[in-house]
Length: 334
Image (cartoon, rainbow, N blue to C red; front, side, top):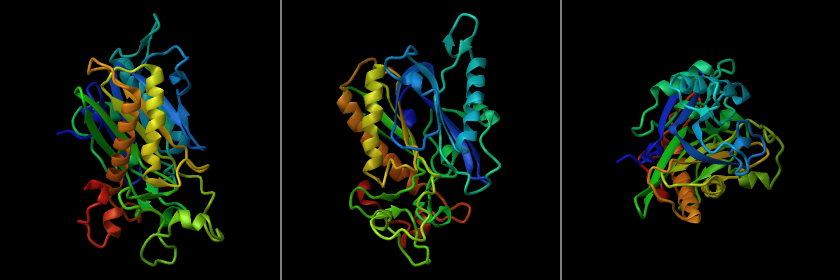
């Protein structure tokens, strides 16, 4: 069974990945339109077309959401997404043209791989052309290509993560799912036992993790605190019928899924952004609180998937490189 974001009917996902440069972009297409909301909690965001998602504003549907690496440069990839949608005559009909609505958000991945290669309009177009409704490819792909966590001592002492996804089904045949590009300043903890599974590694090379939260309450001399090169991006979605207000609340509640697994989260050094989409393909609505709670749970699972599916890149080890036994199961998977 498909246990990723594309389990939500009406969505397809495509990636463009530059593995050598450790960057890329991920597009979530909703060609029939989807009601959308957004919640930005981090204090260093890079976004596009997020104001129009406010419930009081006119536009009622979006046609794609783009998550991309490359810092602010990566927003250029949205042009390619718009171009592809326009070619398909998908967008908001303004009489003289069809205008696709494509909100986007960026994460910072310039510090590993190559800083001079960032997602472009051509990459956004290519991601659309590869989009499909099958299970989402996870790991160091798309917007997760250059993702890392645990940047207290800078990127070279971080842990490699990537892109993860998960889905839940609830009563009435409604699906709720999440996708995340995990690029946090903080560490990732297994919610089941509170142990760090990916984060800042010891700068002296000793085994184990430094424990960012413990270090923040002590002497920060010699750390890279202030290294604002992070941001975790996510999309949560459902095939339930949503209003813009409900989508906004769903995005807000979904942030709890990040907070359960990432510590610290929503810092001045992160631009954490969660989009919520409702395709309405289930033909029925659901309680907003239920959708938000399940979206948060799905997002926590997606974070775990982003950790466990990642592989080492640019000299930065991943979860399976650090564990003494690669077959170790997370307690949250039991």
